[in-house]
Image 1 (cartoon, rainbow over the protein chains, first blue to last red):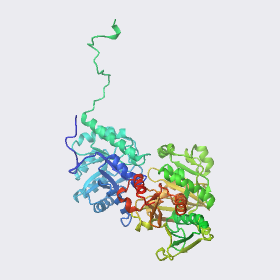
Image 2 (image 1 turned 60 degrees about the vertical axis):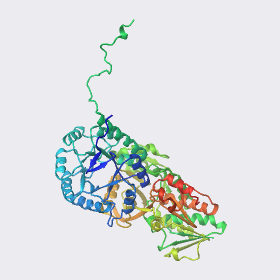
Image 3 (image 1 turned 135 degrees about the horizontal axis):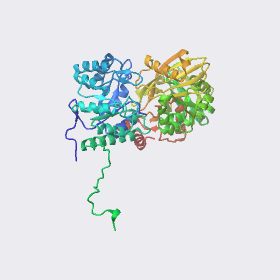
Image 4 (image 1 turned 90 degrees about the horizontal axis):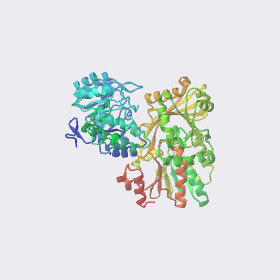
Length: 267
Length: 357
């Protein structure tokens, strides 16, 4: 059986789970904690921009996040300019004692589409400042290239707009991204709504998937976390085992020719 | 027997009322103490005042609806300040997925098409093609409701009200203390956290609504509660931080945008008031009555103060006078369950086993 030969490395840190979970909009922090356990997630994202308020007043919630005992990947959700994102990243480094930052620079309020220009600018500044940058980007190849040039060693392309639950919006684009950057960890970040969609991106060879809304807003977030965990594991295992290519013609698994007896002509 | 209730928000006033009512024949006296100069100036002041157990049930745990159903009787009979006109839940066409996902979870409600929406709320005619209607739900004006409750308490012979007073200096020593200080009780309840909420009040003579309207949205769900006289309360943000009184521009933009989506005439409405405070919540966002010696802490009502306070008050009174224990809301001392933090029901089980009740 094909198994993982080397663990997934994110900025040289081995990661045992390919399921990253966001922490926003659960019915309660207690249910969030259960969902993280059911997911088997070892990395959770947490937003800071709005929660920080004027005097870092989000401490109670953040300490609940720290107590989950998993690695925290702070994000810059809600930031619309490179400058805002950089300031939020610096605050996150101090609050969570980590150089990891999931960089979001939002360019369009309705679709929460990344502003790839601001993203590259912020990524370069943060990478130069010693951050391990996880940029939330589109499937655009040139933007991906620029982000790697800026110092990113992981990319987080969307499947579809944040919270839309639409699954893979541009299959060709995601395939091309995977093919162009075979050695860069690629984590599908947004737009997955069903476990089957998460399995699909893992089958394409993406290294991990990040979920939030589909889990946190499910009727049973804990049950849905487990469902996604199984799907991500299944998709990864399928990728390793080698998927068949769809054919145009039926191909019976038992050859027809050469059979000793043909029922149609039998006695 | 003297029972001292600390805190005159909705939790404290309801507790005082139920305890005084049940304790009258038993010779129990109730004293309410609040450091503020008048009742209801804490986060109750900014509440929406929706008594909507089934609407809430779609997005919270069943306990909230169970306790909340008792509030309908309380605010329509015991303290008759609520209007029963139902709740209308709508979504814009592009967000209809939100409505479709919630509909199967809804109880005590019916699905309405465009004609029924228009018949119920003519102002919304042609604006929403589908809605969920919770006909038995009610709404009230929180400040008037607490004034009415206060006046009722002031007329009870075994009740004393003391405002602008510090509980720590209160004499004589009470037989029982009922701590209803909300977020201020964090000095004693270390699991308590604050969840910020912002609201605003608009005045418009162009729009008439007869009941609370809730707009589903993937990121900014909002409700509008008609307060009469052309006033509409728009609420409320939910932000995981503990800033009490800073209303942000972003939050106001979101609330006003959502109001505009419900009816465009809100764009020309006057902004009468903005407000912000923090809701007290435990990690499971469920309410608790915690006991420590001869003190009960009623807290963690989160965004459901008016909805949950009557049921919690009744349970506290039944515990004091009849020794009834209600495991679904009663918790032993926090220190006993530190290790069980975040485990929700399991933690409550452990607390029961600790034998403190």
